[in-house]
Length: 606
Image 1 (cartoon, rainbow, N blue to C red):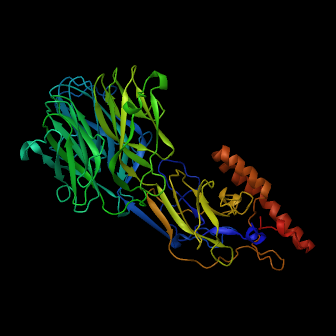
Image 2: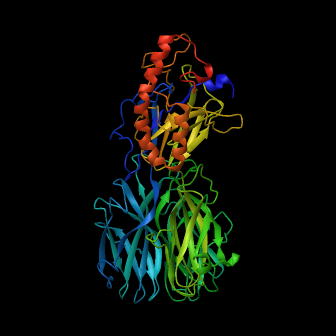
Image 3: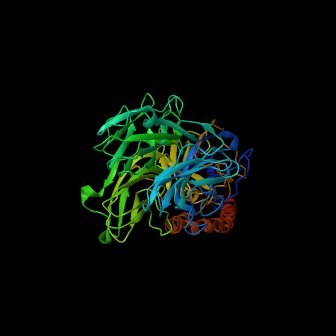
């Protein structure tokens, strides 16, 4: 790197960003409303980003996925629901199942456990009329789970009805929620709706033939024309033989995946996110040896358009298989700890996805049990199974940690599992801006921008622009910038980068940025006037404060950040206070001596 490049102080046009994630403690308090102007950053930032200069675009209908939390379990509270009995469930606003006040719907996993007869469960917002549809069908003695997307009303309560002739326990866990985000509807926005029946072959006839299909019109019936995908609850009614159903866009080939499995004589329901064809239709295949009647209910739809770069936007996909232990011969058993690691697949969304939507099937089990995602023992189940039974359920899985997801079987025996990908939720945040030279405002390239502790980074283009997509859970972060080495990697020795990324010399601005927002630069600002007295030295022209972190300290802080980021944040404030006097003494020495310094160690150049 040339000496002139090393002397260039670079800064992000977005000086600091506050990422507001509900339920997490704030590192720097953010105002309840958008501030009129951000606090002026320190000398390393040449184009300060006032709040009025930021374009914060929020997306309505965003989907946020949780790690899962139990909302209700009748085995510990209230006892089994008798025939025709209703139970009210409150939707919490705090740990462990946080649902924000602007949520319009919740994504649930509903399970009927130990039912004594055949029957069904219905879930709807309390205070609303009982729907004419059900969410889940069950058979005696068989635990049955299903995904449910249920609207919320002002009461923030849900009603569960047991429609069977006998009793059953009910388990309800939270998988995520849909919220307004006080934004506008963009591609990928989810609109939850009341249940709408789009097909009942018992009424319209005929039954779906064996090894045959039925095309179902969704757009114009339960979703507007042009909708990209829909949340469909597919029910196999009193099948005469065991089999499974496959739902996919009508204009694509039938995938080697499963939407719903069923057995003889028992109604079985399965909710799934299904991408719609260009004409708004879905094709449902009956992969059994006998005809079966099918009922399809819609509970919401996804806005049309390219949602691959919409923060927290939902993208329905043509189903694709991620895992089939029958093919590998590695069923989940005691030898492998009854768990398997599934790599997060490549998806069309830009940046790391925040969640994926998968259909999970358990088959050939030697004993009863359940499946759950994650290593924690408190994670709720997503699918219950009995020995010898084949069952399927669709669920949302958080992927903010990246890398892979862990699927575990809780059973004394062994079980084969199949996982199919049907949808994806986009990255939590998108931020963009420019990296410029101090003073002139000219683009600095090659360089990089980052936020937080510098772990979310993006290189610049030739005009200095960058785009960062991240699933960070931080509540307050600093933007920072760095010169690049010829190899294209961030140079840790460029000390204008290290202190800024550690928060050592950038004054935080607090810009409200809810999850699902896109923060961009609205207009270019002129270079900032130096708020401090310049150093009295010809040709230097740098601002005299606040203090810049010396290289040795910057490297030490960086090493500590890599091992203990939270501790590092506490040390940064203390370091700035200690180093304030350091700069004043150095400035006084240089003013008194009037001597020229070595360019390699000039203040502000490191």
